[in-house]
Structure formats: C-alpha cells, structure tokens
Image (cartoon, rainbow, N blue to C red; front, side, top):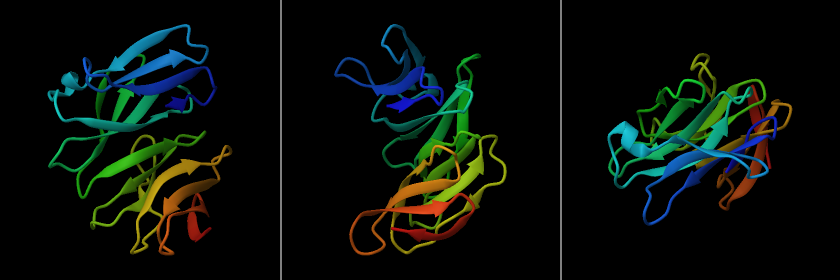
Length: 174
C-alpha cells in the first residue's frame, strides 16, 4: 500500500482467488473505497503481477508496476479524475518500483543493460537519468519527505543493505 502525499488516501493492490490484481484507493480512515484499475482493461487477465503503487504529489494520479510472465516489467499511470490510463515507461530489461517525491519526481528501478539500477525522471517523463551503475542490484527506491534524497536496497557489498544518495546522484552511503 501507498499513502497519498497528503495522507488522506491509500492506494493498495488487492487480489483474491476470485478477483485478479486490481488497484483500489481508499480513504485513510477506511470510509470510502474506489476501484481505480482492473488488469482486464489492459487486455490481459491472467498471470499479471502488480506492485509498487505511488501517488503524484497532488493525489491526481497513481503509478504502478506490473509484469506479465515472459515480458519486461512496465510502469503504468492512472489519472484518477479522468480514469485514463496507459504506459508511463516500459521496455528494455524492465522497469519497476516507482516512487514519487513531493515535487513529482519519479525514482524507479530500471534494467536496460540487464542489471537493476536506480533512475529518476519528472512525472511527465522528461529529464530521465540514471543515478546508479553498480554491477550489483540497486532496487526499490523511496524518497525522503523533502524530496532531496533517495534510499534504496542494494547488495553491492555482498549482502542486502539500505543506501542513501542525493536526488542529483553522487556516491551512495550505507
């Protein structure tokens, strides 16, 4: 699950044996829930895996990662006001683990060369750049509250640990 930046809504992936993965958003107090997206809207209803829901700073859009077996993972967007949805980023070795800062920068994991690294982009898809290039896996980025730093998991020292780096890159610190 993922809280909206104002703390009023929660995006959550829901799955049961009767219902395939779907994205819901609910009031933080549990009083109202609303289905945002169901995978059949994208033309595939089986073997879909969704993860990492992330809210835009104004709470008007949600990004989420999904994968279908045998294909690279993608990041999709859903505009909550219009219900429009589509591909935000895909291709290469796959993209996943989207996290959105309070000023609408997106940190995500991408593997265009086969190795998972941390990348950032503006929410509109511009200014995309790679922040890490370790031969080890760098995954699951998350933003500091003020959007100045990114924390992520990495096995660059031979075991999994948390690293932090500036939004503009630099040397990650464990």
